[in-house]
Amino acid sequence: MQTKIHISVPANEIDSFCKRNHIRKLSFFGSVLRDDFKPTSDVDVLVEFKPGQTIGFFRLAEMEMELSRILGRKVDLRTPMELSRYFRQEVLNTAEVQYAEG
Image (cartoon, rainbow, N blue to C red; front, side, top):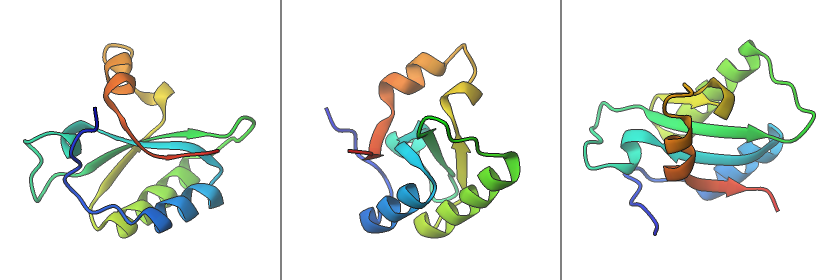
């Protein structure tokens, strides 16, 4: 079942962003998928990189700023390993994929 996403997603820009940054999967999670999403809410984004890609903290911050520009909202960018083990599986189960390589 597809969840309603409460923002406009420019698919071409997301595809280009993911390819440039060696992302194999980009998904939304959190309030952007729920009815409690507000005009002031940020967008929680989960990214999985291609095997062998190591992305440093500063590059991740640059990517977060670029995605914020693309989506027109503040973005909180996370990888699966950064998520708390207490809710990681729930996030992985409910995240809505926006880009998947292949």
